[in-house]
Amino acid sequence: MRDGTARPSSGKRPGRCLPIEGVQDAKRNLGFSRGSPPTATHARTAGVTWDQVVAFRLSRHFLLDRAPARALTTVVRAMAGAQAQVVSAAHLSLWARVHDLRPEDVQAAVHARVLVRAWCMRRTLHLVPSRDLAVFIRGTARRAEREIRWMCGKGVTEGELDTLIGAALDALDRPITGRELVDRVARSLGVRVRAMRWGGWGSAAKIPGVAVGRVTVPARYLLTLAGARGVVCLGPSRGVEPTYVRADAWIPRWRDLPQKDAERRLLRWYLRAFGPATPADFARWAGMTLSDARKIWAWEERDIAPVTVEGWPAAVLENDLRPLRAAGTEPSPVRLLPYFDSFLLGHEVRAHLVAACHHKRVYRTQGWIAPVVLVNGRVAGLWAHVRDGRRLRVSVTRFGALSREAVAGIRDEADRLGRFLGGPDVDVQIA
Image (cartoon, rainbow, N blue to C red; front, side, top):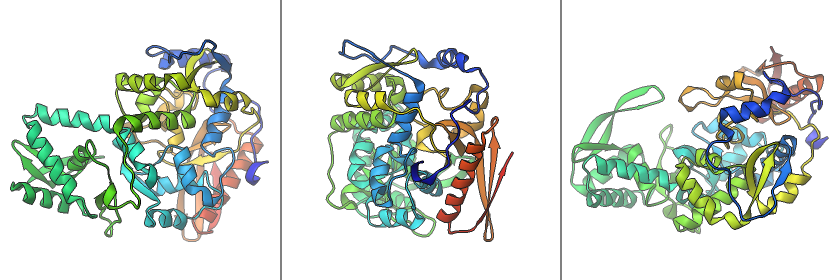
């Protein structure tokens, strides 16, 4: 029994609204066949089962065996970054993968500039190893390039854009707030600061922006444009206000990469964490167009091997064929994954993770991904936690019947969560 975690039985998989024999049809109907299957130069196509794929992916995400706390950076790299627009959720993603982790361990790694937060995949904030930041930002810069084309369509000339982006990057030579960025860029360009409405997750407050012709560019958009040409990350917060800084001015022994090299390396890291997969999966995860994903995929084609997963055509890195085939099919431990966990975000279609009838309960509107109970690598329910003094209350909403072993695993993980959050007494309710 790995890391002392109770395991569910290997009987009926939880949370299914279809008989098992109907799942493959559901996957095809949901779009697994979108576009052409991944191509490769290899003559033979390996066949593997979904149980092997689940075990392989869980292992790569350290969701089979937790890593020791000293391997924190290795875990963040192996899972291809922890989504971190909600910092506490990123901490819980790492707690689910690292043995005896403490919140202060993550905070210390950020303070030491070993881990940094930055906008990369899907232009969302991720926590990534600082020495790999160029891979994550340069490797996903094509999305930011689309914003540059949008600005040109609004009447801003290429010369004006180059000057604007250059001024933004010059201003980010030290950690500064968004307001300070706007002020410094406006002062550098000799233009005025103009108020504008900017919405996000239900907000529509008036904020300052740099006036560029008829367009007003707020700090958040300045950072997006800067991300198409340079590498920017978050610095230390000032109270509740974040700061932003160029990577070369913040990260010790900074090493940049050409965009093509970063894209090739990013694809390899993606396949190590989420394979088997398709170009459409990579495009969804990275936040790029399918045509761009296919182009990057073609560069690495010689090292990518085709596989079929019970009829679904996909591919893995050739070096991963042997561990994929050798992946065990024994029951895997229960895990409580938080909001926006990376394991749930690696593929275009998620029928292998959650039954269609529960999909919208997990993948919600406005990009919210619910906290889930993972049993045998599949979503068996939702969970939440609240602190009430010294007591931690963990509530689970199951999608179907749970075995006694699964219930024991949930309680064990809740106890671990209590220790992570400071040792309160833990109450668990399963409904």
